Amino acid sequence: MRCAVAPGRVNLIGDHTDYQDGWCLPMAIDRSVAVSFVPRTDGRVRARSDALSGPVDLPADGSTDIADLAPVWGRTVAAALSVLAEAGRNPVGADLHVRSTVPVGSGLSSSAAFGVAVTMALAEIGGLDLDGPTLARTAQSVEHRASGVPCGIMDQLASVCGRAGHALLLDCRTLGVTPIPVPPEAVFVVVHSGEARRLVDSAYAARRAACEETAAGLGLAALRDAEAHQVVDVPFARHVVSENARTLAFAEALRIGDLDACGALMLESHGSLRDDFGVSTTTLDELVVALMGAGARGARFTGAGFGGCAVALFDPVRAPAAAERFGGFVVRAADGARITTEEES
Ligand code: GLA
Image 1: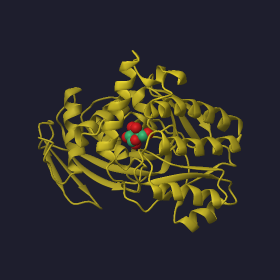
Image 2 (image 1 turned 120 degrees about the vertical axis):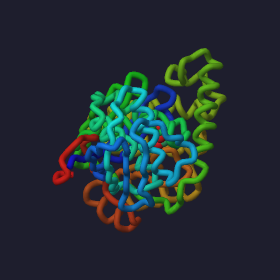
Image 3 (image 1 turned 45 degrees about the horizontal axis):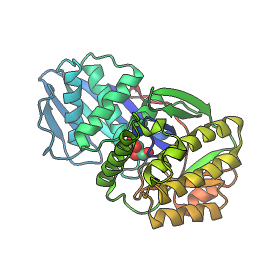
Image 4 (image 1 turned 90 degrees about the vertical axis):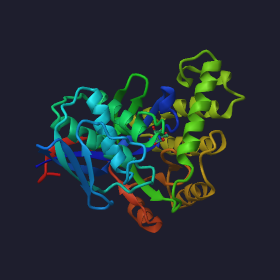
């Protein structure tokens, strides 16, 4: 039996920039979704999960109507089959078994990790060879089709391209990935706000549309190309432009080990997402303040916002106690998605 393993991610800085061709700086984490797979000869794909309802039983040719499919997680399997069929996958059946250690609904990309793992497993079984960027793009299409949310490429690209011990500077225009070593003095702690993410899907789509409209109004392909002076009066766009600059500055600060600068940039990022982009919550704001009070060099929420997790930068001495005090955990930068044997996963 073989297994497709895809990690979740934590975004250290650069949120709501990816769908404007911008920069972000996530790292793949040591929490992952594993999809074990064996071929079937009857043209059906049967998926079961230890934690979720099911099983799901679908034709392998991708012809399932996704919209009303239950259980909801089965839509990702159906969407992967339909996107891969369009890419030329042979309609080979499979038994899939899904396990996950990525907390669900917390901004750590459990859903993108699931999409990447399922896409990898089904592509492999259907004899389709996908390189890294193509796998990330394909899994992004799967997410669009399964959830209807017009997400960017960050989560899938981070899950595919992760490297142990490294954060990833992502250029979401070219899909270029620059791994940056995380110095041993930098330890990232993830803490859940206790607030389930709400309104994420509709607010996300609305923000994205507003950014596209502003870019088009300026005659630009994306806000990646805007200068600060062009967007001073447009808070959404101002966030995207300033966040891109902070992300590049953070990458350089991390590379030279200037962790105080990294921390300050994380705090500025949170403030911009709160004040200019309007996607934080009071609970997340208070959590960031509390993490700073516990000795973090910097903290911010991570992901789309509206609840979920904060990420804080601690030194190695303070990190374990802070993680325990806030009921969070230390995350380590991990390798990206891969196919392995069941025993190794
Ligand atoms: C979600 C999306 C990503 C990205 C973030 C915000 O995680 O899936 O593509 O846009 O929100 O940075």
